[in-house]
Amino acid sequence: MRGVAAWLVARPQNAILVLCVTMLVPVLQPVSSAILVMLVLAQGPKRALFQAALAGIALLAMLVLAGNPVVIVIISIMMMWLPVFLLAWMLALTRSFTLTMQVSVIIAIIAAAAMGLMIDDAATFWQPYIRKWSDVMQQAGGVSGAATEANLTELADSLGAVLVVSAWFIYSAVLMLGYLAYTRLSEKPGRFGWIRELNFGRILAFTLALVLLLSYVSSSVLLESVAAVLFAVFFVQASALVYWISAEWKLPGAAVIAVYVISFVSGYVAMAMMVIGYLDAWFNVRHLVKKT
Image: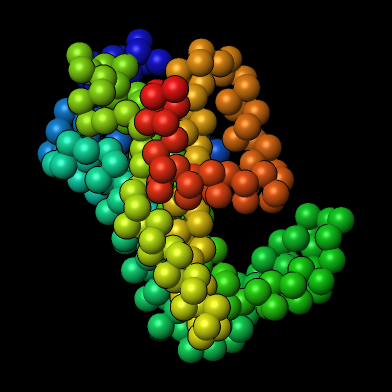
């Protein structure tokens, strides 16, 4: 990774070319965003913004000439690059990975709450999107479009929170990937803090407990949305803890990847990870392990 990262920052045209190519391939778009994070941290926000702007103009020209609507192209580029650019800029300003992640959680909570407040009738609001998704699933075969639509309609009140949590997961993972690439270039790789030391703290842990209590008492969909974000937060903390354990005990990378994959496949494992992350926020498992 060090050689690739060094090549990307060696010349502006290298970064611009790779930003364009990775954005053109849907599965590589998160990689494009991670590269932008690395550029912001390694070269500063102004230079990275200039390179991203040139890459964006080139992408816009190519995709519009290929028959894509201008507005859709611009929105797609902004959705992939703008949030991670702002997160990377915040990381460069605060010089604290943990603080940047904590701020991102606050933004996600505000977004989830705002969606809950602005959408009066979730079933009606999400129905066009649910119908489109059910059509896609039906065309893919093997899944009943009507059944998919019915199931999603029942979960309409939670769809806003699901979208916010999904977006936060993606942008957080991209930030981490870009930061890891940057650490390969930096003479002081831990200057903004280590990802494996990530701890969202007792305030967010107490907030989750309070939100769950109020949600149980009031049956508020809004509070349930906020709780969903916080559950995701402590899943990420548990993932960082697994990373820390692997580094401390010199575990093979395949074992760590297996834990992450299983946690995404198995709901029970994911729930266990959330509980572990929550306990870590209260008791700082890393400190306890070091003491023993």
